[in-house]
Image (cartoon, rainbow over all chains, first blue to last red):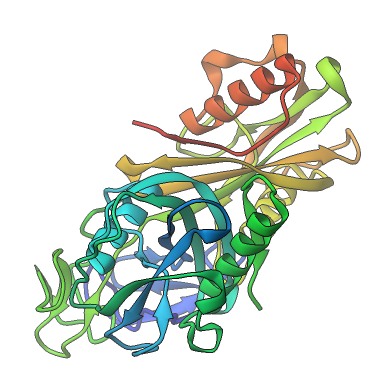
Length: 186
Length: 186
């Protein structure tokens, strides 16, 4: 979860830190009077996919029912925190494998959504499912396909997932090319 | 700079941490045996702009000569770390103001570049300069406009800046729409 002030102690030497504005800066940072360290906090990235099985208006989207908090029991697109050592696309593919056990062909980045309140950017890639068989991991109660009219809109876990799904169905209905959508989630 | 192992001490209680794989995880994390805290490290975002003055093949791009390390004295597009509390677009606009004192109209996201080796994603937005007058901040020795044939390719500070500029001039030469480019920087 988002914490504007993550540091109480210096991660380098363990001394208590103070939030002050460094000489060459304009924001408060966690500063250590003992070792001189300055420690920054920055937004992080959540990466995921919008996996589709089948073509045209009949194509179904893959959703995962969460087996973990937050939002236990609600439905999400496969997604999670980007890790050190991977590209955004690799992270999205890994999360799809871990949460749904789904085999996909990844396409272009489809949504970039700023969630300023929690210090996150959510990146969703379109993907084509290579099989309708899934093998959900421990974070998922159930992974299944939904036609547009079946999507449980009132049981979607995250606003960014809802926004991504809405944009996809709208683009598909209107026959629009799937260009990048960017939006800010209040 | 990138540190795969940023934590020596627990930022919550100051106790020494150990890198171990938590029970419900598959990667080593900084774990505190004293307070039970688990501390994650994730890639962070650099945001910037590609500001253009004038139209067509005569349009000039704005570059800033760095007054700070790393890459002191080399040329960059205005860019810097995304901060908590702002969207990617807001961060890109802020950096353009801080580093160049340039007034711009921001356009769409143009490049998303994974720099896995340093744990970063670089996001560049296209922008139109509203004036050719600049007011560089303390991180910039000089801000000036370059025609394509004037760009100092051997004195560009960062590979992601070079890649963004190359793609822009190529799209412009070929009369292509400025769609999103994504690439991985080795």
